[in-house]
Structures are given as structure tokens and as C-alpha cells.
Amino acid sequence: MTQQLFTLFAVFVSLFLFGMAVMRAGLLTMNAEKARVGILRFVDNPLKGFFVGLLLTILLQSSSAVMIVTIGFVAAGYVTFRQSIGIILGTNVGTCFTVELIALDLHSLIVPLLLIGLIGLAIPHLITYCLGCVSFGLACIFISMNGLENLASPLAAIPAIQAFIELTNDWLIVGAGVGTLLTALIQSSTATTAIAMGFLNEEIIGIHGGIAIMLGANIGTCFTALLASIGSGRTSRLVAFAHLWLNVIGVLLFIPLIPHLSHFVMTLTTIPAIQLAHASTIFNVICSLAILPFVKPFASFIETLHGPSQ
Image (tube, rainbow, N blue to C red; front, top):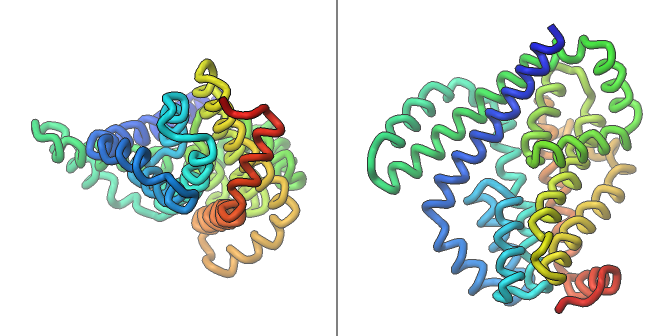
């Protein structure tokens, strides 16, 4: 029985990541040229870079994808390290759009989205095909969310997991560690947050533990950029290190504030998943806007810590 539960858990996580990939493929096909032009032409100051990162992450539905593209342009010399920081800040905020979307109860749209997606994929026209990818990908995401939510109670009944969940509720640093490791493993902070939402909706973890996992997921997502920077030169590695330090510093500052953040989001809505989505948005918006006026000193800090850019 335990093996079957973990198999189903892996299947639903894989379906979530597959849905994200299909949706991203459709959006990227429609906007690949716009993404390239946007990065090259509109990042000459941190504020512009912020909005480029924000919009591209919303369009591509992946902060990791935007980070990988940015590292590629830095490696090619089209974008400087300091210009890339504005983009990083924008990607952190842009990823909240997806988290807010999956928190909504849209399960009734699964069948229509699947049908629209299949029809769109069958029509040999670029725009229709891309819209089909988006629709089909969204349907897969909502199916996986429903499955993860239904699995939360059976998984929590396993003694080892139950003990671990209790640790997450009692020790926020453990929750942050869980979020970091799980995101580094499955390469998606959104998927990790979705799993936490499933446990929250079933009242298996509290909002404190859910926020801790979400904060850890923001650190775990940095491993994608670190992997992408390997072999890309020192300047590209600085971009990955800047992404890591931004999230690590933000998480360390917010962990003591989790009780206050929990209380605030609970006043906004009674739905646990939406509470967590709002907490994610608040965290990323505050951290990004706090650093935005100080991009130059922050860039100097990274260069002092890890060596100057080439």
C-alpha cells in the first residue's frame, strides 16, 4: 500500500511538471522572438530589467527558464552581470502568478481544457497549436493538483511521514529544509508549493509549516541556475550566485516573521491554498522591491564574495 501511494505521488508530480513543460512550450513558441528582443533591448537599467523578468516569467510560466536564458545571454556577452540582477528580481515576482493561479479551485475546467487542448494540438496552425499546448498543460496541472490533494491524507497516515510532518509544523527550519531539498530534486518551486497546498487543504500541516516549505522552495529553485552556469564562465556563475544569495537572505529574514505573515494572510482569505499563494507573493514582492534600489551595491557584494566578473 505504501509503495502504491509513493508511486501515485511520483505520477502526480510528474504530471504537474509535464503540464508545466507543455504550457511553457506553447508560450515559448509564441513568444521566443519577443523574449530575445526584450532581454537584449530593455535591460539597460534595473527597473526595466525587473519588468522584463516579470513579464517573461508570466509568459513562459517558469522562472528557471528565464534564468537559464539570462545566463546564456550573459555568457554570450549580450547582457552584463549587473543588468541581469534586475531580471532576477522580476522572475522572483513573476513566478507568483502561477502559484496564485493553481491555488484557485478550477477543477471544473479540467475536461473543457483537455478538449480545447486536444483540438488545438490537432490543428496544423502555429497559434492554434500554441493555445492548445497552454490549455492541455493547464488541464494536466489541475489534474495533478487534485491528485496530490487526495493523496495528502493517506500519505500523512504513514507513521514515518506523520512524524516528519509534525517536525515541519513544530520546527519551521525543518519545513524550509524540506522545501529546499524537494525543489532541488524535482526542479520546480511551483510543484513543491502545490504539494504543500495539498497538505494544507487537508489540514495535515498548518499555515506556518506551509509557508516554511514555500520559503525553502525559493532557495531550492536556485539549483537550476547553478547547474546551468556550470561551464559558462565566471560572469554567468555570478548570475547564479546572485540568484542564490537573494533568496537565501530573503528566506533567513522572513523565517522569524512567519507567524506574523501567517496571521496577515489568514485575514485575507479562509482558503489555505490561497493563503499560501498570497504569502508567496508577499515574500517575493517585498524581497525584490527592497533590493531593486540597491542593485549596484548588491552586485559589488557578489563580486567581492565570488570574484569580479570577466
